Length: 211
Image 1 (cartoon, rainbow, N blue to C red):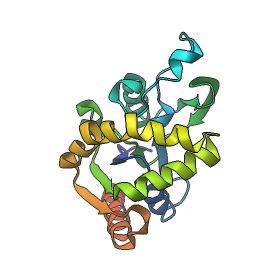
Image 2: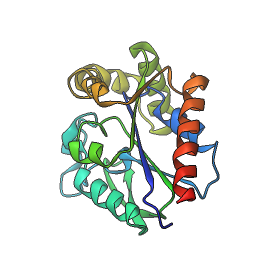
Image 3: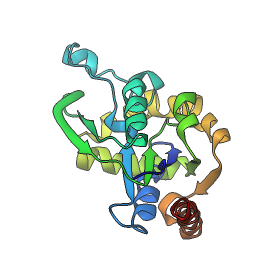
């Protein structure tokens, strides 16, 4: 990989459909073309804190993320070097001992709720996308995910949404929409927007390969 990779940011609120958009775009290309980096793998390590304190973590606040490590890893991928992506264990609310080896690709999709909040990350992106979905759909999707995949109770999901998710979305996430080049309503259901994104990526890659 001699050319600098294309870096695409896909932001949006929790449950907005960022993952669906990312997956839909990725499926248009070979596995050797696109590498996805999820911001929620980069929650800060909290192993130095007792579990009681970890339970109070607001995962929708900018302070929850280890953006320094994320930025370092994006720089390494841009330079053509592999990285070891951390893994976060939501059951114990801290970083796992496990890591995932990630190789550089022609396209890097950086996906996360607050990737447009940090100017250092925004500066690395060639294309910035915000997935804009109504709040009622987002909370339903979050409930289903947290209960099925993270072993949460319905009461705990609702309590977290009211106390952390909604206030953080309004204060930190929604305002980053202004930095987006493209706003995609309704996430992965928007086939027209996905087609446009895929065509744009193909155009950028073809120009790079012509050089």
